[in-house]
Image (tube, rainbow, N blue to C red):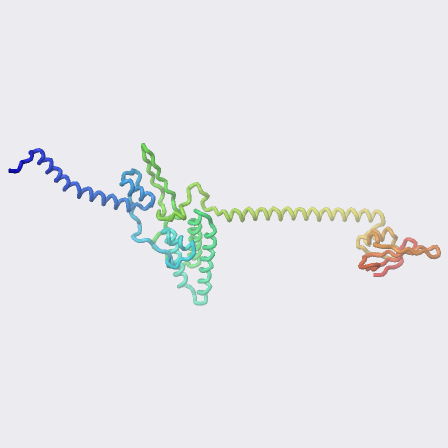
Length: 336
């Protein structure tokens, strides 16, 4: 005859069985709810922390309902995206929305154009896309996001201003810039702030959101160009000042020389000398004042007459462009 177990042991076994039946389904449901809540967190880092810690962190943000049921794609096919700027637009929901709105405005404006204007309008859009890719592609690091948004917004404004009859799009545009993640952890207390409306947090880590302390809207390339332009402008102003000073100095010297010649020879002879002319009867000193010292001289003395030939403008061996004939210290003729 089998031995009957004690009553207490039977009661304990029944309790364990009942607890297992009741507790296991409840724990599985909680795990499913926890995983579902962690997966609904938009930030990748916080989502991983929630799954690793089992949802025990007090600063894990609650899931936020997206205002849109589906993500808005850009105006082009992301599968054909070849440029880094196009791939950045495809990987960011905010940039995709801006590009989508730009595409809709472009199509509306295109339909309103005349056939004679259509080709030029399409070419202008292609030129702007090339300019956007080149400009924002040269921007380093975190400023790429703001560059794309700013240029897209400017193009939208230009299309809207040129086409007053374009109907406004119903969906509002997202925030102009992403906000930084400001969650801070502390061992004793946890402070969670609610920032201003933020852009979707699925921005790839290759293009992190610009920090609040960064130079928002500044472009290092534009700063360098501005500094170079300022330096070039300063050099041009300095050269202009130097040139004006030289001209003024030359004018002062010319006026001083004119006054000296007038005082020495009189007004008429002074004006002839300043005009670098020669005439019969002018003295050797006046000839030197007008043409300067000769390059060579020939002397000849005949019957108490001293004849000289002053040679100017040497062009070869014993070859000169001008010869002035002087007798007894006065010019009697010349040959050019």
